[in-house]
Length: 313
Figure (tube, rainbow, N blue to C red):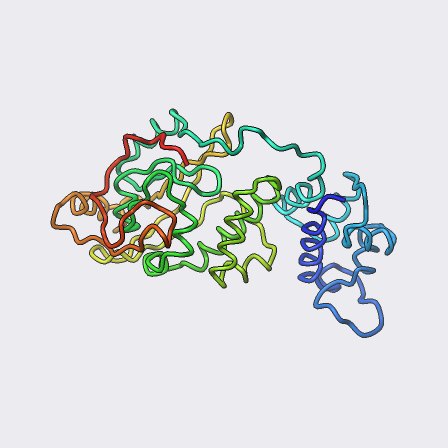
């Protein structure tokens, strides 16, 4: 039995716990209730399955799962499109084979790099597998107050560097979405040992990650608003857009877009000039042991557009 079946059962339990009989459009079965949402028997009826069949699925004892059964469960649990995709990923790990080139260092896509150079008026960065930075422009570093050098982990900065919570005003919204994206990726890539190790480390070191992980929510690489508290220019408001290319969906160009004519749009040219000034005050940063990067503690070099954007992970 594939080990990932336990993840499938946990996801199904989390989804039925959030759905009450009334929300599902059925009368609650009689008797005392020990679950916050649907009972196994109630979900089985909604999905057109026997109670024993559903119990085997949730307990990881069902060897095969047909598309018809998965569709029935998705309808009964009222899953959205992303949750449906996640359900299928969790149900099909046995059909997945390890990619021999998966552990090799990623090289930034040249087309995405060229696109990023045309976006020097807004913050932008190129992320690879597991949230590793492949490239970023100077304005991104100035906005976040962190070097974000190629090879660094954006997720480790987000969760382990206290400055991220100070910089990102709506940190819980943005960070919880990042945890949902990590869970979605673990379903897509169940054999990625480095991703599993990253998730385990973040869960161990950050109680927020652990709490959100146990919610079993999944999110995609979608637009998430971000508010930044800059020490010089005040609150900056961005919409975050993630772009991928068909030939390499494991890289995404993340662009911090702004409303034309907004105070943030007016501030960005001034911020770019300020960041390039030798008199700009650097933000204090943790050292390499804390974040797993090679940035010396307490020092930030002047933000730049990285020429060595193909630096490996």
